[in-house]
Length: 275
Image 1 (cartoon, one colour):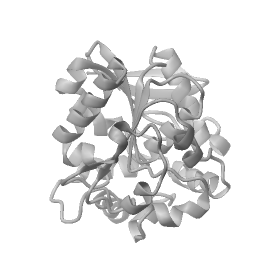
Image 2 (cartoon, one colour; image 1 turned 30 degrees about the vertical axis):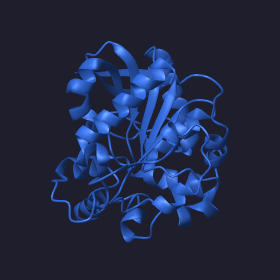
Image 3 (cartoon, helix red, strand yellow; image 1 turned 180 degrees about the horizontal axis):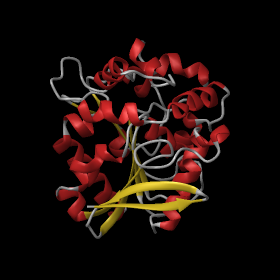
Image 4 (tube, one colour; image 1 turned 180 degrees about the vertical axis):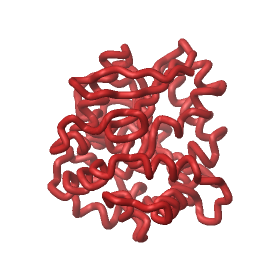
């Protein structure tokens, strides 16, 4: 697995690439996270089979801070970087996989009429505006930490724990390190942009989508409402249903990596076969 960097419209972007040569899969991490959350997947059988790319969004991981702070830390800003990255790496026809914030970035990118072959999102309930947030997300103090500029170690651990199913004993050291390393302006900038409505109607996007969409959901997700997801109209939904993952929370790729890899791998293969 290779750690690399390139420049997208003046923005320094770090990313990981697996050794696989199969269909391209492009991964986008969540808020205050990094490409490191995908390392086990890229370094294993999945990454050996598929050509996997995992980006660090601006202000996250090893990427530089947003060069345009007024819009760089917004869904349209992130989606523009993602599109530019895909062009530079020959990944325009990839399957896009987005977790949490990354899922919303993927949906923002899906508004373009061409490009990706299919989409996998989880921890990212589609919303049409700020009024939907209260129904799409479950109440809890940890969610607010994701929009706070200065986060201390205690707050970072609370936020990281909210990614896991209740009672999970998994260590969160790597998640905490990513949270503390993230540019605080990325969190406050995202909050401001969402409050101002600077994002595309995601419910409209999934309702008009002409390419396959897989929506995964950890059954123990502490942040996203499954009831809300079940009420959305998504005509191209893979298998015609949400894929609920037993034992997973908001981060099933970390908690149940084998099941997650199997689901995403099957989706990629079926998209390639035109099923």
